[in-house]
Image 1 (cartoon, rainbow, N blue to C red):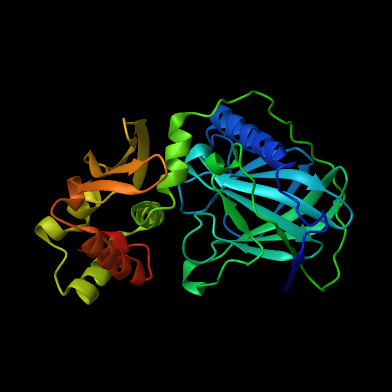
Image 2: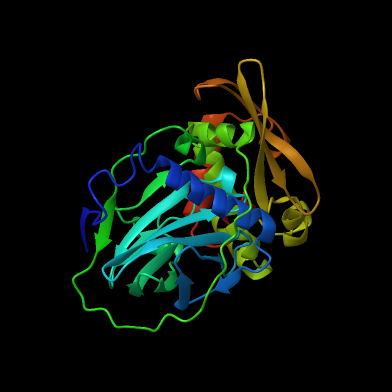
Length: 330
């Protein structure tokens, strides 16, 4: 797979196109707030998606609770331009992906770690595109394609984005008729102070680590008693009884990690909250300036008594276990 400049022009997204990209964010945001992932299509293997230009489809990967969208901005005989994001959209970077026929883009939907989805352009024309999306197991450790750019929604307002590249392929594409229409949501969603805070927080080392923890927690909701028992014995050298039984540990282990934001006199406060079957608690509170510099970080809940270095080491250990029970192992 070779990477070359976008066929749409040198400065594809610049001052002239920033407004157009903002429209993309607004459309995706509006669509998500109205749908909330309720109609997300779960994919566990190679799955075809047909989109009209300007249309949005919703999906989730089997074994994960997180919902995502894919929005077809432009398409032609030579390629297609799609945007992908998670829900709620203003907490997530927008992934810009430019594909030529038969191209396969390896995408990290979380924008952290290895690719977890492969997107292939089967055919396209001015009215739409036919895609095939395939989940990629984390154990494959496939690097995301270099032609993909992540853009925080807050950075699109009144700012220029960088020059884009196109992912292309040398193989011959086959043609699939485009017949399924997806309506475009036109409701306007206003930018909030929270969207700016999320964009800034995502670029900090704390925000990046919390995104990784969120990914692991959601993935590891697929943990089973038998896998947990063997994993605990292998990695912790302890027996799964009493407080360490699967029942007790699964009640305390988070299945998700959410973030909220509020304004302060000097910038923003980000609150990261873990959600487990037994409780919801504040794990991290981070204060940042209006430019994104960290002022202060405090840890609580399941992270009480820990610091960034310890949390980072714990994540490396738990995620490195390689199955769906890493978050359950102390």
